[in-house]
Amino acid sequence: MKIKLKRLKEPFILEAENETGNKIILDASPEIGGENTGPRPMELLIMGLAGCSSIDVLMILEKQKIKVLDYSVEIDADREKVEQASLFKNIHLHFRIQGEVLKEQVERAISLSLEKYCSVAKTLEKTASITFDFEVIS
Image (cartoon, rainbow, N blue to C red; front, side, top):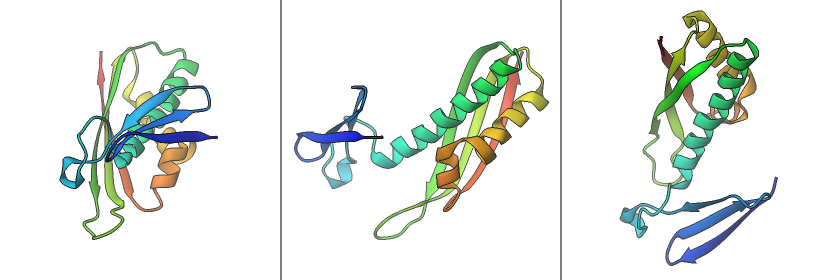
């Protein structure tokens, strides 16, 4: 995996590009001179967790021939309060799934993702407690 990153504008507006040409803008908080023109790096990490686990969950449900009509995830994450690197301490994901699916199927799919398949979750679990809940909308 290769990523290119370049500064577009001072002080912190950055553009990251992957090997296939997909790009994303990053920025810093206004408190340190950023302009809020893109997500911060730690926000991208949490977005990656939501994306990684979502791909797993949707694939697991698809393999069970479950049609998902609507899907979303909200994440609430807390970071340590330290002077330098502030790692995530607690991360909670709330999944909303609409479709003809049993709660047991959803819970199993999410558990498999976060405990076994999602590489982002496996990376973050070394420093953070990751929890989840969900709701199924018929």
